[in-house]
Image (cartoon, rainbow, N blue to C red; front, side):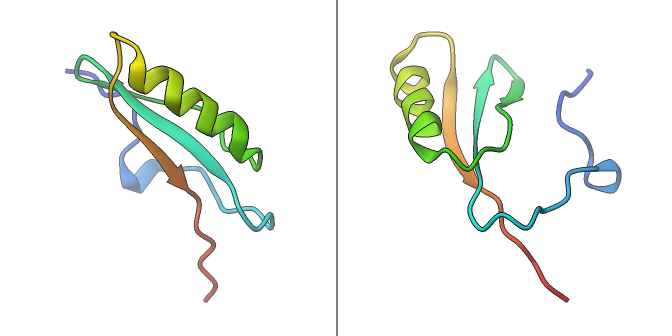
Length: 70
């Protein structure tokens, strides 16, 4: 079965210099979907409320991007 999310070894997302970024992760059936990373938290929160109350998505989660410095 094909997966929509990249495996950890092939991930190309890198953390930016912006301090706080969020995205929404939600499941439709067995497939995970993600919104774009954004620093506009109210928009992500609005999507969260809409998707959580809807009938088609489940396991709706707001994710925060962490910056790891070495």
